[in-house]
Image (cartoon, rainbow, N blue to C red; front, side):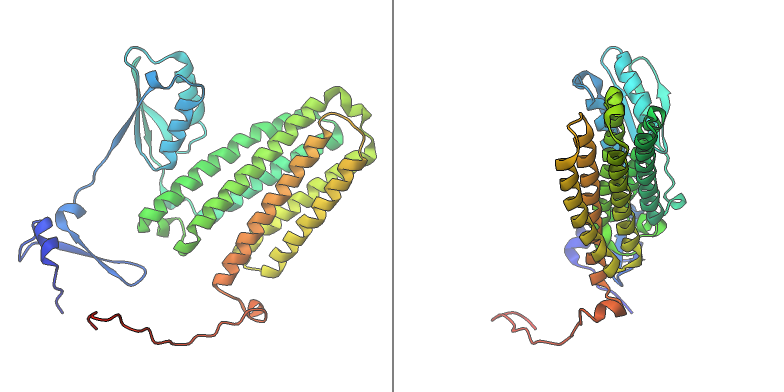
Length: 345
C-alpha cells in the first residue's frame, strides 16, 4: 500500500522521493507521519529567571513551581550582581517540595536547576490515592489534637502539609505532560484522555482539603487558653463532624475509581446533611474564639468532597455499568445528515 503526501507539506519540510519519514501509530487508530529531521531533533530549552525582577515576596518561588509544573527541565536563576540570600533560601526551600528538581550548578550570580523525574516510576492513580491519604492523615491528626488538647499533634499535622504539596506538584506536572506526550500518558497509566481535565480538578480538590485541614490545625493552636472553656460535648460533636467530612471525601475518591454512582450519590446527600448539622452546631455552641472557624473549615472539606463525588458520577456516566443501565439506557440510531449544496461527496 502507498500513501500520497500533500505537496504543500512535502515542500514545507523539504521532503523528496526516497527521503526517510517515520510513521507513528496512535492509540486512537490514527497514523502520524513525521519528517525525519523533526523526529531526530531533540530540543532542550533553558528557562532563565531574573531575580532582579522578582522583588515581591514569594514571586521567585511561584515562578519556579510554575516552571516545574509545566514540565520545564532546565531552569537558570540569575542576577546581574549577586543573588540575594533571601532568594537563595527561597530556592532551597521550594526545591525540597519538588521531586526530581535539584541544584546542578551554583555561583554567586546564577543557580542552575535541573529536573530528572522518571515518569515510569509513577502511576497517576497511585498519586491521587497518595494525596488523598495524606489529606486524610492531616485531618485525623488535627481532630486528635483537638480531642486530646495536644498542640504537638497539631504542629505535626501542619508540617505534613508540605508532603501534600509535593505530591500535588508532581501529579500536575505529569498530568500536563500526558496531555501533549502520549508516551508519558501510557507510562503513568492514563488511558482515558477525556478524564484528564477532571483529574486536574480532583488533584486541586484534594490539595485544598489538605490546606483546610492545615488551617484547622492552626486554629486549634490559636484556641490556646480558650481550650479549657470548650466542653467535652462540644469537642465530641466537632470531632464527629470531622469524621463525617473525612468519610465524604474518602468515599468520593474511591468512587472515582470504582465507578459506584450509588455510593457517590449517597456521599453528596451525606454532605447536605452534614451542612445542616454544622449550621445547628454553629448556632448552639458557646461563643468561644476560633471554634466557628474550625466548624466552617470542616464544612468546606465536606463540600469539596461532594465535588469529587460529582466527578465520580460524571465519569461513571461515560461508561455505564450494568447497575447504572437500570437508571440510564443508551439507544443508538443512525440519522442521515444532509450534504451542503455544492460540497463534494
